[in-house]
Length: 176
Image (tube, rainbow, N blue to C red):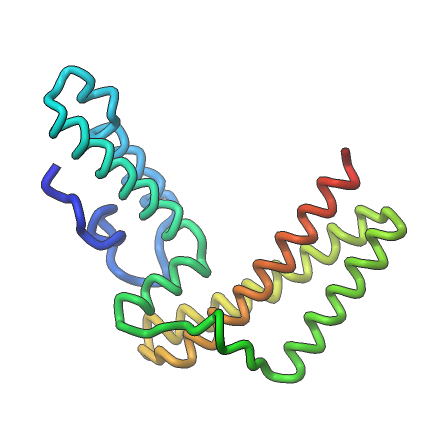
């Protein structure tokens, strides 16, 4: 269990890049989990059990972070010493702010009308916009190493992630 405290990419045997192979990520995670699962150390010393638990926790955190594109980009930027400033830098281009307002209004109207199909269409639109931004992130992070540009894109993706979560929550509420 000497891998404890490696960065997420090293822990999972991946190159520190935005573009990752999801299948390789999943396989690496399952392999590590099998090696360090606390049940394997049930008969071990308290130190071994504790290390197993810590390593399993780190593997879980690494997997969650790298599986989510926004979190993966944020983490890559952190490795470069770049703070995305999501909490205190909410300045966005007017066009993007208008799009968010439009989405919120559409969500409110569809929710009021209990129109799940409109909410589904809205989710698809948001996924498309997120995919566009993620393509830009891949270029900014993996090719150009344009950290500030990437940080701006992460801030936009965080907004989209929040609205998407709200729409998904609303769909679940309406389906129940």
